[in-house]
Image (cartoon, rainbow, N blue to C red):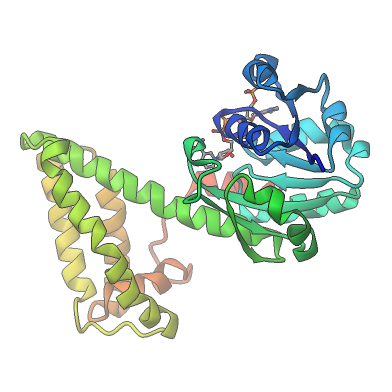
Length: 306
Ligand code: NDP
């Protein structure tokens, strides 16, 4: 039996997904705000819907690959009466709170909502190493597991619609801060005549050691145990201070190591200098401990859960 799927949103990711479904023999209907992005897919056999309403009518399974949830509301609010009976597989990035609000919004219109967080770049879609976090109603996930597996390996995290978004944003937190740390180190490296290629084996060696580092500390963190037996927060604070000064001497922006230094100093000032730097997990999550950084972006986004 030929399966139907609709893909709304044809950025690089949505296009890769529509192509994967075409390759797997699905009848694929596509729609995109900028219609020309559907041209190549139409030539490959996708059906181009003239309107969002038409796209929704074409399949029960509707994959959303949009910049964020605002884009989803912009598309679907005007045709909310056409959502009844649809399964919205929302693979757009946004916050856990917004995913929870969207699941409720979908249910209010008779649709099911599966939150997804794609752990792959577009060229990896349809390949075995790629996976996606999902959360939402288990029965809906199970019914559509095979169709979801066309895109990536599905990794179901639980019923709470916010969970997949939470896992996704946790990996993005790690990815973006680590990536900026790498770019920052390369900016400092330049001031010393060290190229990205020169530093590559050393950066790689350090990052390759991280899984063991994380495996050593994770059980201690979950147990609330932060002994300073291997390293102390005071040592970390001194070390980060050297990074800040090396950065300043190189004429490079110190905002990133300054932020790290502030977190370490906050932990020391709170009396945890003899503990491991892992104590910062608790310090960062405790607004009662003085010295928390303000974030305009966070306040602006969380003020409007939908
Ligand atoms: P893009 O931002 O390039 O494309 C997003 C799509 O959203 C486009 O089709 C765009 O339409 C549409 N869109 C944005 N705003 C609106 C709006 N207000 N109304 C209607 N349509 C709108 O994203 P990608 O394709 O790269 O990614 C899609 C999602 O997947 C994102 O949430 C991203 O975070 C996530 N993701 C992306 C990865 C990647 O490597 N690209 C990796 C993992 C996840 P139009 O073409 O008209 O502008």
